[in-house]
Image (cartoon, rainbow over all chains, first blue to last red):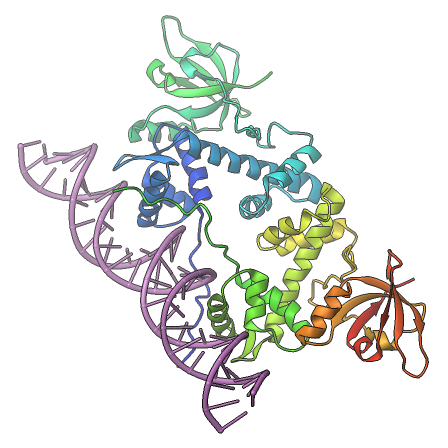
Length: 231
Length: 231
DNA sequence: GAAACTACTTAGTCTATGCTAATTATGAGA
DNA sequence: TCTCATAATTAGCATAGACTAAGTAGTTTC
């Protein structure tokens, strides 16, 4: 009998930790993380996600509302933040101490974050001077599991002149989401408030750095949650 | 129904790479690595080893002679040396750049060696100045997979005055092995040859650093293979 | 050279994680 | 309200790696 030929391209395996991380990212945008979004992010099939979701809710790491999606429990959130800390510290360490560039570092950190001890992460954090942000500006959770919660303002409430980073889009409505995307209003984009009409009128913004202006009606401007960027 | 309780102490899983590493170490002492020795080193059951041995020989990484033991094929040897390089570079990096001591570093390297990329290992090797030995004096295989084969002398043949590291004990006899262990004659121990009686007589050694003397008869001294330590 | 001990292998399971195919729920449009 | 598309779930199976219990092959001893 032929020896069984080893699959030259075995399926990826993503651990529980990977699931928790993407659930954290997906649900931070608006409550529930959908099965299919988790599947897309991890590049696994939906049934695989359903199976893992069952296991994770049995162990109390997530809450699952069938056909709606999942949310992290406090315990799950802690585990997710721990991984995010590891990831961001690793990325920073590899770039600052071992000459990695930002392109190549993600994949390396992605593998290492599951293998390093907490001790090693803290040693790296010390070597880096206990950094609070990674080079993307993303806050690094503390070892205790706290993360700086950005204080977000609705665009409709932001003062004229403020420089903002769009962080969350507070709707699930596909039509509105599509519209925002068409307008370039996706999380991460930088903008300034250039003008607001009186009596709760529309807000005029300018994209940074292009300066490209846009007018956003009051109701939509209430859905766009932004973080003020330090002067 | 109660949700299944997660085993709080799940069985260790050791990968193929771990098996290859211990097979390398065991078979470097004398041809074949025995199933039970592999099991003891990896702290898994013998049937687990039998199962893995079957898989590894099907993939051509080892040769298996039933009831005798296993040996690495050239391919398996390459894989094992790659892991040994990773392990030793990691240990060195962690101690020299992140303040680890020799006690704690082994376990960390043991986990990381499976997750790091070759690229990262080479960056660490550069940061360390392409080291050839780890602090135990063990040679670090090159990236190409070559390792310095230590030239060993039998203690019976070593010149008086030489400083030696005991490397291999050339017998499988349990009684002799037990005796050597009682005498402190285990691989890794440092000693000097202080005197040898004429006409193939016994050798007197002194342990380093204790200076503790011991007399070893000719026949036993022929079983103790040592490496000369550079002055 | 047979009995008995030890070492190894085989048989049958278990768990985690993945998959495909089939089924069921939900929500949008007619 | 009914139908249908899409999303989510269940069913059934695969694989790697572990385990225990049971059987078999070598080895030692008288």
